[in-house]
Length: 172
Length: 335
Image (cartoon, rainbow over all chains, first blue to last red; front, side, top):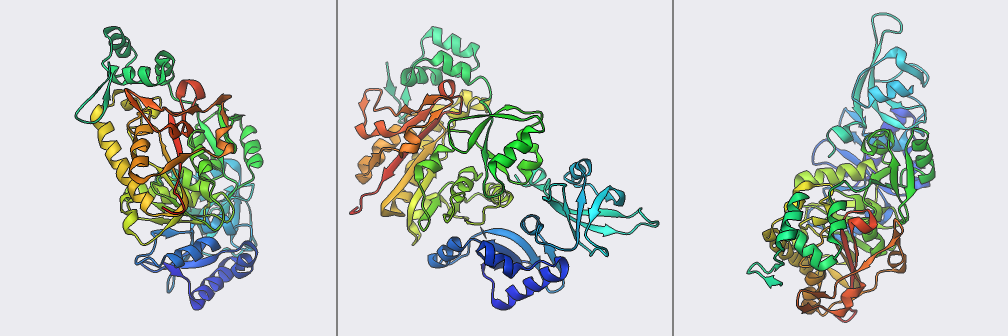
């Protein structure tokens, strides 16, 4: 785990822009902090508060921390995905690929259930991409889902990819 | 009559009447006899520990304005009362478990006993300081420390399963100023790192949580012995990693003086350390209306360092919390 290089940071910024129209550099300019990357597996990006960034570097540890900051996204050679926390902190910045659920549907989604298309209360302009941020009525991100078309209009579904109920089911 | 066993644990033989009474209430008589000697009013203490203590929520301003969260929950039937500890409220009505709400999943609050919230407060971590939570899982206190703007926290947890839970809680609560390290607190002194403030919320025999965990009602004295040895090792190691002038806060959730006052008495002798008064904000707190209890300065036949009067306890029957112990130790500049 280490600070992201300029090319790594640029790749993530481009992916966020392409998928969700999120301008991550402008956002970082407002809220502060920086991006770190963990390449021990598929490259994971973390949003690290500035004081922590400075301190971890100053410690000069032989081995990096297990985790520093918030895991926000994963970006490999071909795959890009937001994490639960990436969806949560960036949902209000996104301008595409978001869907909103009503209260009852939101509860079911938090149990990891797929959603029928007609349970979507509203959505960003079509077409939706392969992964969408799922929000409740209050605009809080519940997780991520993949829209799958149905064999008739209105018969599609949202396949749950990850949901915040995970924290109860498996998070410990 | 008090005796000290080969295990270096204080033994208080229960009277036959106390033995019968303890058994009727589902508690080990030897534990109850010790509590009667150290804290008095054992009847109310045991009665309080036969039930779960109240549930407390610690609002998380990293994620949402506490007033917003409270109002959202109140519209769904929850109600809260001030605990007396800033940022922590007592749950009065809960239509469903507070650990299974949307707001909990969003990290808008953590579930943390009101007494536990006193330990990070006692540390008074400031921006720019190197802050260590030496025994961090499951992370309630780590997250609380990270709620102070500009404070970065280093959290140690060697056990993989506990570390997973720690990371999960930190992520859920949006604390981006925390680094989790897989180190053991006992190895601290061997690391080339130094910290300005260190929280040692030590593994302990957990007598203070007997209300929530019935297995603690039948503690065995060997456990006190094992715990005090592990705690001494952690304290010594943490002391070595503390900057001169730095502050170490020591906390446990046990009532056993071997792990609390007597532990610190010996620590102070080994390191010429001094326990200092807790910050005013902690000292003056009234948990559910009751002031904190000063620590013991005499245990059995032994007089302890008089500075231990600056330590504080909460007790289940007085404060409606778990049993908790808290001390703040300063390392001299020239040490």
